[in-house]
Length: 280
Image 1 (cartoon, rainbow, N blue to C red):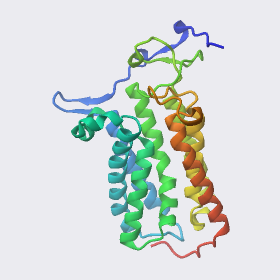
Image 2: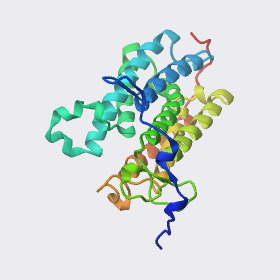
Image 3: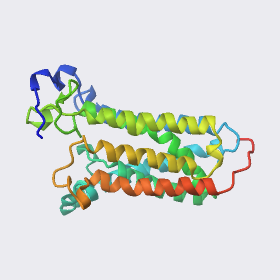
Image 4: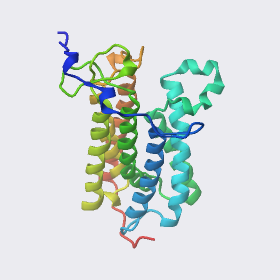
């Protein structure tokens, strides 16, 4: 049954007086999207150091700088390559366009893959237990999810499907004047906010940090499930809305994350608890 949409009752994006540009100096523009990534890195650095103060930490506080630098490279390289492979494969016809980060185009799933590679290399270099480092990084990740999704909304991009709800927004970039779900904010709340609350509770109120893979598994399950559900109200990229079994690209990439999360979570329950030692 088609949705009856009254565009006159919807929120117009231009009424919100939002601009993708935070600071315009003529030759230089500082965009909110860039600020979201900078803030994500800063908050992640701070939260990791805060978590390492608790007993049983898997690494020394002095190693956080190297970890955050490695993760930043993984996010940028993985996010960009993931976007080009999953959503814009035609961009490889002009390979230099892959380097044009200022034109936009990042994939969260690609960023996750980049982070995994960075974590493997970091753990090997410092001779640390990979799963335990991943647990701590998983707890810091939701900060970035919240900030980046809010930046997506400010940019007026990655909007949702048509909606008749009173908070539906008419985004000028859609060029059709149809009210749509502000799915970016839904994602900020569920993929980021809910995950942040649950993981913080598990870390600070339970012994989850001492069970390798527990927090990583929970984080993957939370993000993957939220993404699969929210894809039903998010507008898929053209041509990527009905892939295998009718899933969107976002759902197709998230289902394996849920499976991996369940596996890590189950593994953590079967494994032994890490002995508590003073934090470095």
